[in-house]
Amino acid sequence: MNSQPVADRFAFRTADALRRKAEELGAELPFDQDIGVLFEETVVGGRRVPNRIAAQPMEGCDSTPEGAPADLTVRRYERFGAGGAGLIWFEATSVLGDGRANPRQLFITPATAPAFRHLVGVTRIAARQRFGPAHEPYLVLQLTHSGRFSRTAPPGERRAACHNPYLDRETLPAWTDGELDGLVSRFVDAARLAARAGFDAVDIKACHGYLLHELLGAHTRTNSRYGGPFEHRIRLLMDIVSAVRAEVPDLAIAVRLNATDGVPFPYGFGVPADGGAGLDLDEPKGLARRLRDAGCALLNVTAGIPTYGPHINRPFDRPVAGTAPPPEHPLIGVSRLLALGAAIQAEVPSVPVVATGLSWLRQFWPPVAAALLKAGGAQLAGLGRGMFAYPDAPADLMARGALDPVKCCIACSRCTELMRMGSTAGCAVRDHPLYSALHRRATNAAGSPP
Ligand SMILES: Cc1cc2nc3c(=O)[nH]c(=O)nc-3n(C[C@H](O)[C@H](O)[C@H](O)COP(=O)(O)O)c2cc1C
Image (cartoon, rainbow, N blue to C red; front, side):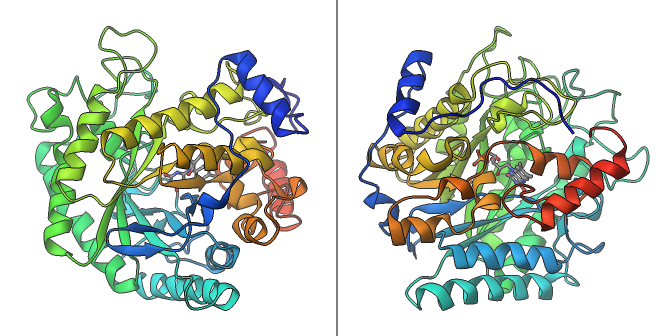
C-alpha cells in the first residue's frame, strides 16, 4: 500500500556491519557481546525487578467503549507477561473521559477498575506459569490526559495549554488555571484505583505532546500559574506527583519524560532558547532532579511528538503511508534517544532510568543495551515496537542468548498506521494473521493512506 521512499533499509547481517555504519555516521552506539547484565535483578521503589528488560507502554486502542481492557488488551499483556520482561509499562490510560486520545484508549474509573485488576492478574499468572514464582514482573500503569490531542472531548471543548503553531491547525481555547487545578484530584483518583488493581507504580505521563508535557513547553502561556517561567511550567506535574505520593503512599511513582521534543522555542521543551535546532537539556535535567527530590522512583526517558518529527520519537525505515521519509538515518535517532536517557541517568543516578529507542536495531539491540547498562547509561532497556513484534524476546534471550531475526520488529510503521486509521494496534508483520488482516481491512476502509 505504500510506495514512499525508504531512507536506508536495514541490511546489516552482523553487529560489526551495524557498528561500522554507526561509525561512518558519527552516531555513538556502544556494543558489548556479553549480555548477562540484562538478566541481573534490579530494584525499583524498594521492590525487586527480576531482570533489566522492560516492555514500553504501547497503546493497542482496543478497550471497551467505557475504557475497560478488552480481549485484545488482555491478550497483549498475557503475551508480555509470558515473554519474560522484568518490567511491564502498561499503556496510556486516561484519567478523564474527555481526555482520551482515541475512543478505544484505556480509561480507569470505578466501573472499569475490576477489569484492570483482572488484567494485572492475567499478566502476573502468565509470568509465573512460565518462569516460576521468583519471577514477579514490576507493573507500571501510565496515567495520562491527552490535552490538545484528546479525541473524545465534545466539539469545541478540546483545550490546549497555549497555542502552538507547530502542532495546531486551529487555535484551541486555553485551559483556565482553575480547570488545570481540578485535574490533580483526577490523577489521584486514578492512582488509587491503579493501586487497588495491583499495579506497583503509576506513571504520571509527561511526554509526546500530551497535556503534562504540553505544559512543560508553555512558555507563551501568560498570566498563569502554569505558564512562563520553569517553576510554573512544571507546577502541574509536580503537584500531581506530590498529591499521589501523599494520598496513595504504597504506590511508587514513575514519570515518562520527554527530554526534548524538537519543537522550536518558545513552543518546545528541551530546546535552545535562541530558537535554533538541537538540544538544551538544562531544564529536563532540572526537572529530573526535582522529580527525584519529590520521591519519583523511576524515570523513562523519551523524546519527540509522534505527529511532529516522528523520527525523533520512533526511528523507522518506512514512514507512515503518505508521510515524508525520515530526514536522518534512523541510527542517528537511536543514538540520540539513548544519549538522552544516559544524560538524565547521569543527572539522577539514584533514580533508575528506562532507556527508549532500541527497537530499530532488530536482533542487535541486546549487545547495545548491555553496553549502555554497563556504562551506567540506564538501568533498564525498554522495547516498544520490538515487544509488539516479539513479546518472547526476553525468554528467547534467556534460553538461547540471542534473538531470532525473523521475529524482530522491522520499523515499518504499520502499528502506527493501524492506530491512525482508527483500528486496534499491533504488529501487522510478526503478529500475523491477526494484525495483518486488521491492517488490510483498515486500509481498505480508509480507501487511502492514513
Ligand atoms: C503503536 C504505538 C503505540 C504507542 N503507545 C504509547 C503509549 O501508550 N505511551 C507511550 O508513552 N508511548 C507510546 N508509544 C511510544 C513507544 O512507547 C516508544 O517510545 C517508541 O515506539 C520508541 O521505542 P521503540 O523504538 O522501542 O519502539 C507508542 C508507539 C507506537 C508505535
